[in-house]
Image (cartoon, rainbow, N blue to C red; front, side, top):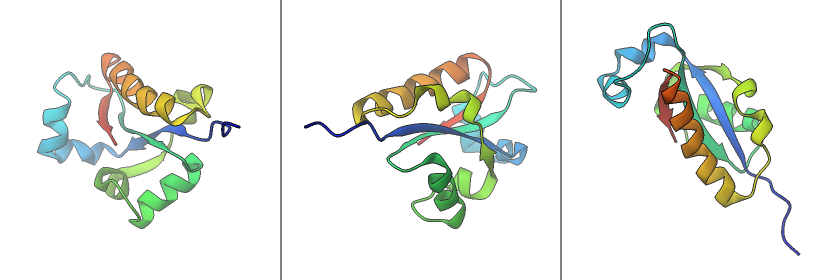
Length: 108
């Protein structure tokens, strides 16, 4: 019997200070002034739990640990939950879609 889908994509808003990182700027040459900076990830945990782990430095992305403000559920809730392969693909697709809208994006 297949397991029920339990993977999630999530989006974290990052503080504007992340733009001070040359690496982040290089990854976002098409960022549009006024658009948010975000981190897009996927997890087998509840996104709230995963965000808390990032902030605590547990298997953390440094941008989320240092600049993460809060989750942006309006950008991802409709997709969740998913199977692993769907979440892996959606993480990439969501990042591409947000970049196309002018967001500054870092992907996990």
